[in-house]
Amino acid sequence: MKKLKFLIAAIVFTVVSVYAQTDATNESKFNRNSLKNVSPNEITNEMNNIPQVTIPQALLKNYNEAVDSRNSELKKTTSSEIEKYLTKAEFTGEPIDVEITKDLNPPFINDWYGSDIQITNTSVAYAGGYRQLDLKKGEDGWMYLAVNRRGVPGVNGQITVYRSSNGGAEWNTVASITSITGYFGSLTMLVESKNNNVPDSTRILVYSTLSANSNLDNAYLICSSFRRDGSAASYVTVANPSAGNRFVYPSACSDGMFWAELTFMHVIVREESNSGGYIAMHHFRSTSWGASHTVGTYSNNTYEDRYPAAAFSNEAGNDSVYIAVEREVSNNEREIRLFAATEVPSNNFSIRYITDAAPGTIYERPAITIQQRSALLPQRILVTCTKNDRAVYHYSTDGGALWNIDFGLGLASMPVDYTSCSSDSSAANGKDFISAFVDLNGDSVTVRHGELGNLGAPMYKKNGVASTGSLAPVSAIYNEGNNKYAAFSYAGLGPAGVYYNMESLVTGITPVSNEVPNAFNLEQNYPNPFNPVTNIKFAVAKTGLVTLKVYDISGREVAQLVNMELNAGTYNFDFNASHLSSGIYFYRLTSNNYTDTKKMVLVK
Image (cartoon, rainbow, N blue to C red; front, side, top):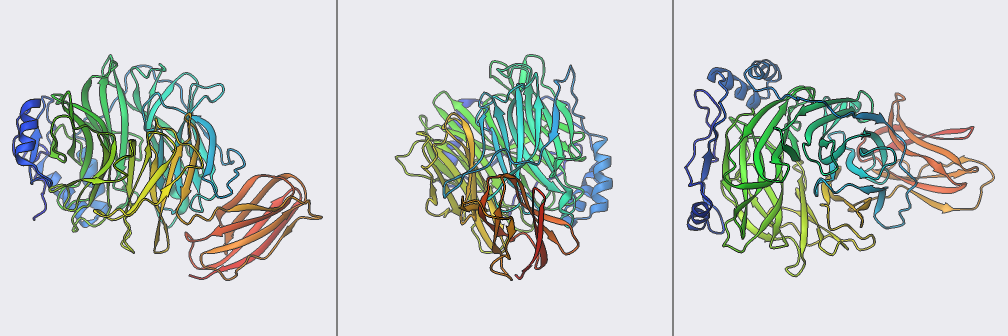
């Protein structure tokens, strides 16, 4: 089947579509008469009354050509011109004080011993809904995790971002976004590199809602940004809702897989009344790394559309942002719908139907991922959700024109509240998609990792640490050479404590002996040469701060393995160098007045 393509209208971005009736009864009838196990190629364009933006057609054509050809200079000039025609996102009122603090020290000493790694023992927020964590694998090869913390002394709200340079074996804090008087709702995170050849150009953007009220009334949208070392921090208020309303459930995506400096960020947010009634859906875009935003607003609120989840779709002719939502068709029927918004913000979203069920069927809380690959290839989409409290997934291999629905994620007898999903863009060895979910009893996290239509058998059933049933887990795929490993994180019972694990994870530092050695000592790594894991053994003669760092041949730090207070004793560190190139490296141990450096060779 030919791939659906967006067309450019003479005045605005819009979509050629088949009109569908818009009252709840007729929509439900339309679905069941025309959609079976696989939905047909039907798109509806629900119009709204917001004044349309006029953009010259020739300018839009040049912009799309620039995107398709990956012409950075043309994209830069045409996008700058287009920005002049778009609605600027504005914030009115008095902003709540927010501070970003840099912190590269671990939150505390971990005790792993074969269990899930505890990244932090803090309590986790929940008032803003189930999205309080976000996990991303950066283009720099590192893992990043954002946590909305609760009960931090002296402040009302704090979001902390953690990073790991070795696949999650060891985590450090990067920065904390703190408000003494404000409360953070839910969050979403982007990790983007301006130049993949310069790892420290990686920048982290955290979008979150913020309110002066603990019930999150009148919450508005903010964007916090900093480098992966916590430096060069900035914070902007993106926009606020109309009086008496609040923003909820921001969901961010980007085209960063295909661009370096010209990465554009997108965030979708739902506006609702403070009592919870649906008002509108907003699409914010930043072409300036979060410094400013333009906005398109979809105000058709005929239906109650909840929990927007966004993903970027790289398409020939006109890139898109897809938004999966839970739609209340009637009091006892909820379906999954897919909004398609043009990459340039406009006030028109098209709708693609995913599920079609009889009354009494309740689909809830979707998550979405789109594999980032060439626009010349059919776009592959995975949507996970629950169906009558059971985990299911739906997928499309042609950009959302046709859908395969209701594939089981878990056991039919296992009630589930929340799911998550992610994908990997690498073409090597398949296993491009992952999903994770927590059962309602809160005692296990299950992970599925495979291909669309065959996500594989459940890989993990984690019962060692009880997980909360009130927050969604987060998942990602970690690359080591040509291998792809399932990674996930979740909040513990409470919700308190945040835990992480990964398939085939090498868990870094482990104590060998508590006997106090006579002197500090750093041994030669083994094996050496190695690929990609080697063991480094060292002795600590006196309790204190210990650092173990790796440097390349030019003296540039490439990995921080240990940076924590250790008791006197002997330790092993399993160093995973899969993110480094072949070559000569040096590792240095420093503690008290002791320093020693040794050479090792990575051969891939």
